[in-house]
Length: 309
Length: 244
Image (cartoon, rainbow over the protein chains, first blue to last red):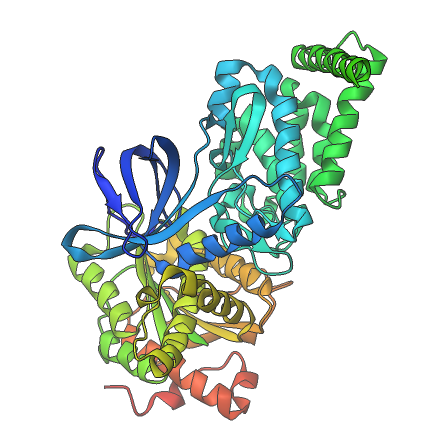
């Protein structure tokens, strides 16, 4: 359900915060979430992402989550939230907004299209690590879907739209049907790490077999939706073949959290590596080459340190 | 928290005005949400206005959707109304403390704690939703989607930490003279309930107003005690005061 949110910030206009007088020049619209719009803005030559919403309570809920994540220091959390304020819209109406770090990147689907599907295993692994951080802090992401994953250079992954982030044990705040465990008659809508891993599996299928998945949701009667149907698509997909076993485990909630899922995902690649399977698909070969380079690089660094110290 | 959720596809045509009925509900502390189900064609200007007005009088939300969006809409509306109900209560408290009840009037750094309380209460407070289903002839092809939406709502409510229950009514009742009939008494699970509307005879008039009044009455009776246990019975006896 999209809220009737019609505020538009024009390119070149300057947003001034009501409380703290922060000034941001609007560059362009980056995207639209359930609770508001995200714009690319500039302040003192630095780029930021500014999210403006219609509802102060909804937006503040997101800010609360971001703040609690920011407190989680020492776990590699980069500073994320820069400013929280209100702006004056047309007709004097006030709109709440917050300013966050801007990540130059593209959506997951277009990244794989442009850079090649061989990036998929690495991007997948990076996404699982991102989810792992949230899980360790006691949150589930909730609304994990292709649109909410941005990818920057060399497969760097960033999650966007924190409107669905929910404390473990509470009801998922925001979700998208086809990624939802409940929709597939496969579990509750309570937030837990396994909920995200279920969505992650659907996301993998959505990335490689979008048409089949769409067709399935149109044809199936609600009571017949199940992981069996999802797995049937995965098994028939050549691109997903290496990870079908992993997907089955994730859909059935067999991984405790994203860290455990990531470990299994990593193992999957290495196992294929040691076997030197001749039927190794292209992207896996790419992966092996990448890890070879990484290994060489780390040996090099190790040598350097030992020589100079 | 108490809500009535009306799912309909057109205009009421008999009995008390549904807008008056919704205002009654609101005065009892029951928020009325309305979903207009479209699909091929529309509810007409009159229907659209009525749907909007019922929600406004009932202090709730209204949306026009097609059947494919029904589950998602019902779920989101219920959730949003919970937050708004809590928000109103919290704002009343704020009014006493600050002299200004709106959250927007607080500086952003002070909003955090208030919103945390709203989120917490929204998750843990008890919630009852009475679903009121228009079973007139034109709704027939949409009933499968309605049942799915009810199951889906139950799934969402079960994930809440607070006690959550639904009851289901359809209108008009199956026999002549019944404005409304209960299909499901207050329940917190639908496990094993495959068909909520077993032998529905679709058709007849559309007594939306009287049906809303009956749901309000059900709340009152349910809180008094035994009404919930009567289950699948016609409840026309309760309607004496309201039938026009």
